Image (cartoon, rainbow, N blue to C red; front, side, top):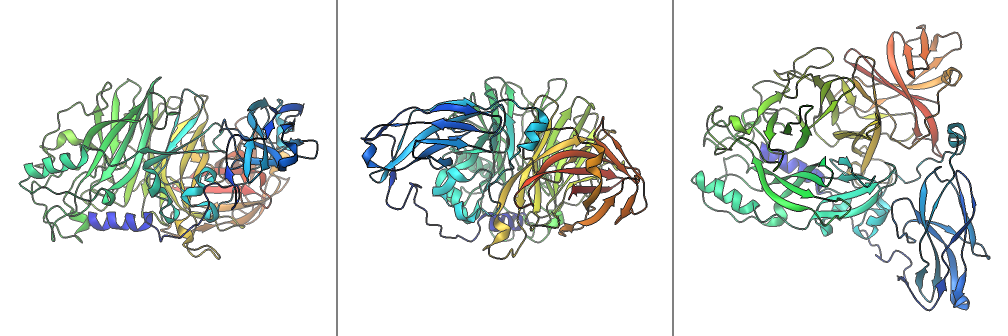
Length: 635
């Protein structure tokens, strides 16, 4: 059944190819984009600055009679912006006001003209908007404008416009240069990614605007097939030579070990069956790349093999493909996660479906397992160096329907938190979390269940959902959890559109990267905000703003069901006058920014209202009541 599982994932990743005919020039059907020409431009200057706008001016030094169009292009991330980035037209005096900007933020700006079927650019100006008070920032807030339906820019030739389009199984690290770097599984709408290598990356300074960087691995590492045949030979099997295009490139994990050292663990899934019909599917490998500076996207150096699937069934790999609960491998070597514990020890965490999630200590210097790895088959004792069980949904059942472990340590609570993806990935995907005082467990859910011994994990952190407007999201899981070093935590994952959204071919293949804020409850559990992060200014929330109607989603687990919002109303007399919890009392703690309704603590935060038209800011909440999870948004 592992073969079925791999094929199932491939079917979801290798979506129906949709011919998307875009000109890579992206400037016009008849033009091409160049950096110089007979027309020359002055470097832009700033004539007026506010906290939300920059007024800029340029001039045509030579060739003015050839100019057809003129304007300015700008970007937060890209230091040589083009018309593929943000653009504003210039007036007859070659001036323009760039509005809707974030305060106290540096923007890279170039003037451009269109002349003689080509674009010509000025030298670069970097200008910074003024600082505003928080209330002024909120008044001037402009929400993200990029479309969730990105089918019109899904093609490879439009990758500079992707932002968070075509993201699956993201991993995120904050680097020394102040950028957040994100890497991912090979997956995209219409298979657009196949032209650009593997484990694609992008980066952002603000977690909202992302610059696409391209693949970090050009082709299958040279060690993979020899290592596969070495293991096969030791098993008494013949050599194979699979097509490099048939391997899977899944679920990398990036981690900053120290300044000047970044590690990326990645997963390579080998195609085929171990020994033909009637045998289990072939193994996977976890490998390692390192980089001293992730801004050099080509600087990832492969360090080779780390670990592979291990079986406690000896060489008894003749397991029927539909005998899911008794599959050949004990550990499935995919979905790596990496963590340095509070004592400074390094660990690799990995696993998917099969027996559960394994943890193995690795050497700090090499990133490889400390223990010598024996042949990856034998008895349970023989394969002990391949890892210790830390989470299993059902003890003794090898069809777990759980994967994607991510462990983080929060020094404020002194707990390790294990986040997990549950269920199939197209719709039902949801995220759970458990915690432990020790890196190796036992991990307990919010209900006290020991998931290291075998139990469903609670609470539910994300789940398919829908507010009253829009189509909502499904398949929200396989997360990265990270912080900015200043106590602010974030959750990143993919989200998929539901099936059969009108007007979108294969809408469930839309995979948008989601970034959300995490808050921590008073008893130390992480809650993920229901709306995606949009860099809304952190203005204190007044009690008066809480009065009125809210959309409430009961996020209690139901397999593959998109949970929909109902309405509740908070009155000035501190009671709920309609909807769920009608008649219950509510109170607000402004110091902790928590709303309590019906004795349920709900963490409040300002976030972008992605369903509004036009998008704006709103207030959201998230909280737990035992095994139940609640999300809310102010109307």
